[in-house]
Image 1: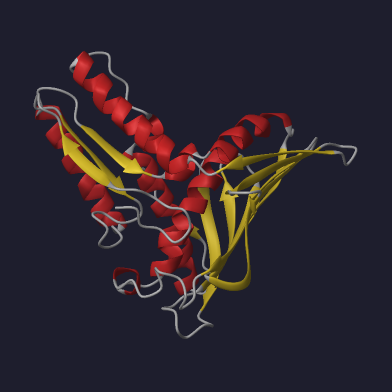
Image 2: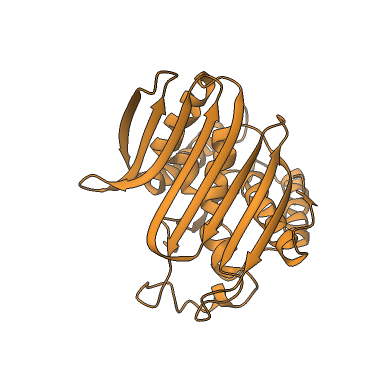
Length: 284
């Protein structure tokens, strides 16, 4: 099931013929129904480890997060090493969720607080974590409910603190008249920006600004969904051929990575519900 308003995840499942199970689940929901809470994530991970320890071969449980495979973010992750010491990070998401959007009437997104922010935002959180190459330690956020045809909250502004000492902002508007999505990382030497755009097809423009103000840009069309599925089926094939021995699954598909994305966004929503109180991000 391909199911996301912002170029999101594809979910599928299968089990191999030799008794080594495999499956791929959607983020942030499980089975396309609803968000897993932090407690449920912990229980699911514990259960998976328990089942895996008794299995005759390795069990593959993957989480479909296509932004881990988007070429623009992969390129950005390479370029981030050259920007120098990280000074500031900005993530701006101005979505286009309105009554003309096919996902607008989705019932499960409306069944819990922050449904649209969680469903849409988890992809951009995945992109953030991928780019900065370290974890977010704590957040402080404010939320509001402005567009009453959407479930609350529909706006989120958060300051986050990285374990490398840098701070940044994550700002999300679920429904905007002028949609925009970008990540911007300012370093002591260069500045990296990745912004959604259209050049004959949808994708992301990666721009690197040097100390002299010169800019080098490259456009990367979307292909994350295709690439994540290729990686998943390659894992299944390799696991079958090697029968679990010396097999190392693709880490970008791991359940733990998906849990970390959800935990960060849930911490922001928790802080917002507590009028900006600083919240520590759950570690997985």
